[in-house]
Length: 347
Image (cartoon, rainbow, N blue to C red):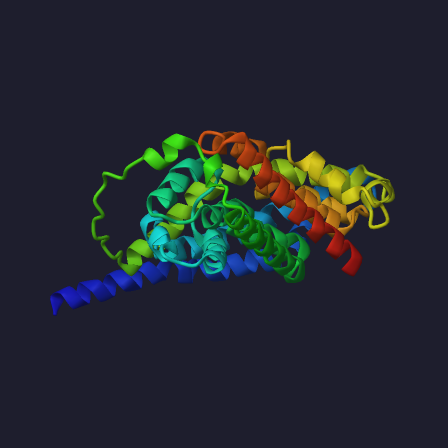
């Protein structure tokens, strides 16, 4: 009986802090625009309509808005992630047919806490579990490109419609690219030593965390992820604010607008060598669209930066041969080009 009371108290403590903090979050989020206007117009006393004024207004409004959204979503996803682990992820993908495996791997990539820095250990773990190469690559495409950071920023800056379009097209690219690579039977272009790796680790039965521990994991995720990316958010929004205030309305529209046939491939060629994550690139993309860059071209640029970043390619070179890396880049880039042209046409 005493143990039950203790368990109930722990569960209540797990809920208590989020319940107290949520109304404060809602209040600040709903009043951000009024607060930013008050600071710019009344506290600083700047003249409305001037370039510097609107640049500062954009920056003061967008930084706390994006950070508030990130804290809320990362906290929720941090709790969800306690139900997953690398071992559980591998187990869920073992024995699945190619297309089913691609779909499941891409969906798991959205909610699992892995990025380009963990590409090699994940790749090795998947190979050891006998998961097909194409399914593994579907996961590695989806994990960095479609995550909670990207979703939060897209919702905050563009709204749910564009966010859902991005998620849908990103999943299509991850599934399609992985499926095609699987059909091409490219295992011979994986580094020879990868298949010689033997797992000497015994699987231990995982302890099921309590709800309080899951909530604590949510707070830990907020601390770790926001702690790592806040500087990228501020830099990205600062660049976006500068473009918002100073770049002429028709300059980028003429270069990368809907009527520019070379806009999508040019955006991808510019994006692949760049290094950034969703936190750094999406605020910039928001201003690109505002300045006349078409939605499809902007999405193509964003996907190429996040999914085909140069650091991830260099990391994957340790486990993949250049032939497979070139095919991987070509297939993913082609998918991004098609998505860009389709949405430029539809929108």
